[in-house]
Length: 116
Image (tube, rainbow, N blue to C red; front, side):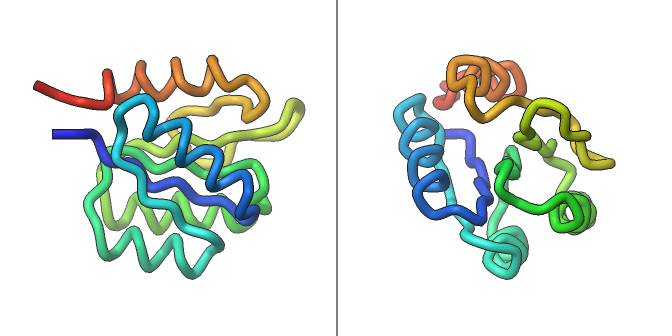
């Protein structure tokens, strides 16, 4: 069974790029564009990991981390720009401009995309 990720962004092209990268690595990905869609998807599905994009304002990231933790015990990976703080409650962080580092972090958290 493939590991399932909810990927959230406020930027459609970045969201699509991240979805394609993660799918190429073998993960099942549900993408959510914006705050409302992220909450709807979180409540509708079961996810092994939540990824919050760097385009999300810090206040929304903090609130989404809180909502995700109320509905799931799965970890939250926050993407951040250099110099930004990690939102309270986020379990991991990565830099969005380091694609290899992001994929290594996801693999460290979840293992390979496909589980035997």
